[in-house]
Length: 113
Image (cartoon, rainbow, N blue to C red; front, side, top):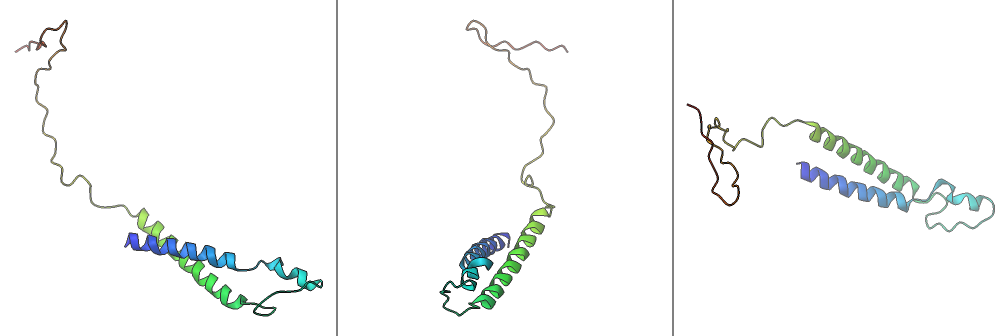
C-alpha cells in the first residue's frame, strides 16, 4: 500500500508541475491592455476555468497523498526485525589466550579454583 501511494504521489507531483507550467501568469495579458496584440487560441479568457479545475484537483490529491504518506510513516510498528534471532545464552568463563610473544605459542592464563 505504501509503495502504491508513493507512486501515485510522485505521478501527481509531476503532473502538477507540468500543469502549472502550462498556465500563463496573471501579468501575461497586461501587454494586450495597452495596445499589444494578444495571441491566444481560446480567446481573451483562455482555457483558464478548465486548467484551474485540473490544478485544484491535482493539488487536493497531492495534499491527500502527502498527509497519507506522513501518517503511514509515523505509525510505529508493533513487530520486531529480530523475531527470528535466538536470544544470547549466558557467556561462559572460558580462558582467553594471550597474544604470542617472540614466536612462541599463545599462553593460557591459569585460573584460580
